[in-house]
Amino acid sequence: MGKHRIGWMPGDGVGNDVMECARIVLDKLGFDAEYVHGDIGWEFWKSEGDALPQRTIDMLKTVDCALFGAITSMPKEEADAELNPELRAKGYVYFSPIVRLRQLFNLHTNVRPCKAYPGNPLNLKENIDITVFRENTEGMYGGVEFYPLPLEVFETLAKNNPKMKRFESAGLENIAISTRIMTRQACARIVNNAFKYAQENAYKKVTVVDKPNVLRETGGLMVRTARVVAKNYPDIELEETNIDAQAMWLVKNPDKYHVMVAENMFGDILSDLAAQLVGGLGFAASGNIGDDFAVFEPTHGSAPKYHGMYKVNPMAMLLTTKMMLDWLKEAKMAEKLEKAIAKVIAEGKVKTYDMGGSNTSLDVANAVAELL
Image 1: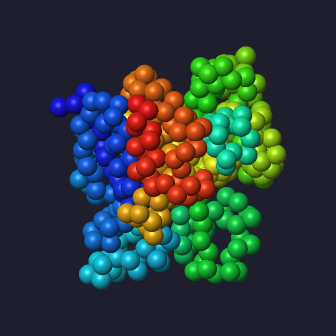
Image 2 (image 1 turned 180 degrees about the vertical axis):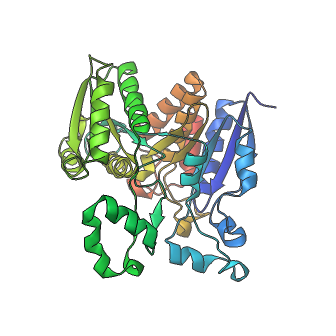
Image 3 (image 1 turned 90 degrees about the horizontal axis):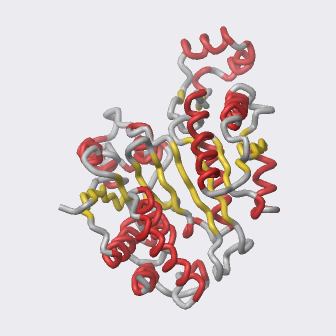
């Protein structure tokens, strides 16, 4: 039995390819771990009506943390059509397994570092170093939705807010509602985690991003709560920006931002934008972190057309692996891995197609491993 027990969930498509790359560097590092496979992804949705089987949930309760590859996801109608014929019309509803994991295990803090490594031809600027803190369990991704709109929900909303009545003429059968539910506790937690990170890493500013001038209640709650939390960190500036303006400023002056914090959907958008500034999703790592459990994943999709071709850039997964090592307090291994990644990028001899090269994912992983 290894020192660490790791849930191992390749998922769909190229998730399998990049997880193989992660294993190459972990083995070369001498990482002492037992890897426990977990079934997750589209094949299990199609064959079982559940992309996150209960057996995988039970397994995750026995491990220290988990490493996850990638997931395929589709809208409701397309997902229903992909079910095996014998499972259709039996009440199965697709729900993103990674969103379920975040909620089931209360993985409240999504951390997405976006760093420009010298030598990467895809960097917008060389000195970009941004970490986005995204609230991970509430907001627009909370999963409380209605279609068609039930009469009792409409009546309750209309009773409490007359603005709802103007939609009635469309017919309840034509109305869809997605809620944005946010709590003061979750807002305070994610903002505090962002400030704590800034304090530990000597950053002097935290930027909270929302849209309180339009989303007055939810956005207002986030901003008001951030102001209260900021009082505990008098040496760190709190900056408040609107999501639309922030997207523009982030492209214009990415080097002026280091720690950003937002609710679920806005954080998702911001972190993908920040990732593109340093080379795209092929360099975008993330950690879904709770109080005593975490799931680490690259932020790219499953790209099923490339499955088994070892075509995609594995750096996102290797940087995600580095995050996992840090969380497990394997700091020396994490530092060694990041230095090796940085050197391979700087030398520019081994690179995948997105960087203008012709090497495979495995070539890149092996190049990093050789430096370990």
